Image 1 (cartoon, rainbow, N blue to C red):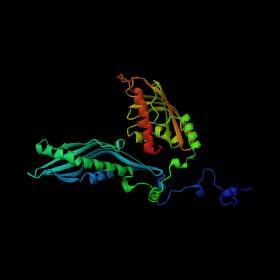
Image 2: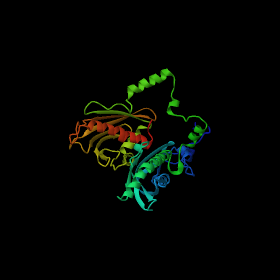
Image 3: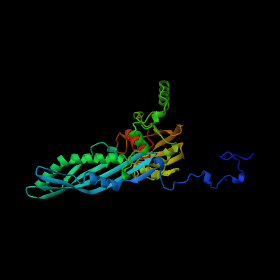
Image 4: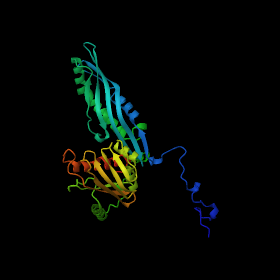
Length: 368
């Protein structure tokens, strides 16, 4: 009997799609208007130019008068570093590390003398978001008028500038370039007073079920806030990601992705062979790689004693689709480095947690 088509009628074999040949019925074509519906696909925008413009608007045009001195900021005199905004499945992930200088002028009313200088923010970064960033007022000269204006800028202008930087961070976290904020559906939910659905909304809330789920999870893993391992020479971690195992594998073994989350040079390939990360501070050799299942490496920090390598074994579990657990065991970790510092265990374990796994969550949107 001839097979049935999608509409219920029979088709002869000659009308059916053949192996290796395209068939329009089974091809999901790109939208002609290029729309990324519901922001489902990965998007990345360079926010550096936008950042310069926002700093110029928010803190580069401050003007005020205090104690017979007219002060004004004269714009961005220097900005270096990077800023970007990523979106995946409607989630916004921003990152930035910026070195900013804002120029200023002060006019002394009694003698009309104009002095100049800069306010320097050496490190505005996402890892310090919500905190008051370090800032220094740098006078252009060493005379009494320079010192007078510098002190006024420190006491009066600097608090206003911190407010501007905080506003910049909130805007970038909301989407930055193009004014992207929450997805339209989320905004609709907010305006109607309803709360957007979360993972918790899809879990059974009956007390017995919640308790059994919690107990089961406790038996199968330690969560990402578990205390540091205490046993010398061996580190054991279990980290949770909301993605497929291959996604985490790609983040760890694809050179471009490693450079993206580490923000530093890396030479990594998804195959056995030598590798390096964080500009060579971590290096070694991949001994075994099974995508989505297992990674085995000889692994060391540059400052460990010459020739000493640990062994890293990473395996992946997926109890249900999109719910991934990563189990790491690192053996033969030295007690001291080449300079006899006894912090190797803590430094290594915290590095895995904060500089690798947490950054992967943040940059690629795989977090809880």
